[in-house]
Length: 148
Image (cartoon, rainbow, N blue to C red; front, side, top):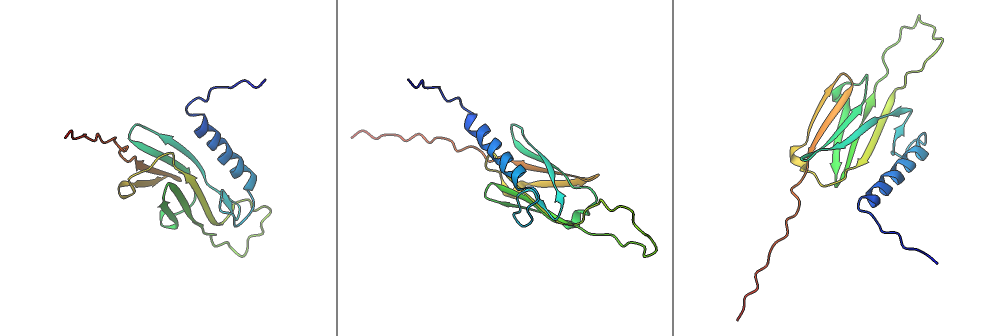
């Protein structure tokens, strides 16, 4: 006999987040898919929610703010840019090169609608802070019935 288990609110969004994380981890290292990594560069980020805002903090060290592009399409926030390779002295013989250069892109689904015209972003010490104000929730409209 199959027992029915009640569905708790929030479990669907938690399941969706776990699936998103699974796909992001799976596709790391596949250039051109644009999920998490391109050309060896990763963008680690935190996504938090307050009463009024969605807050995104992304670590993008060693990049000028002019080389970062932030866009919003529907409820998908995309951060992309390029870390340019610095000139090296031709007299240097490298024993190890571990720093990565090139283009990067990271997209994340926001948990709710935001006011696109009021988004703000700051960049300090390699951390990009994006504040996305939430939209006012749709309020139910009471419809009056006229009696004739």
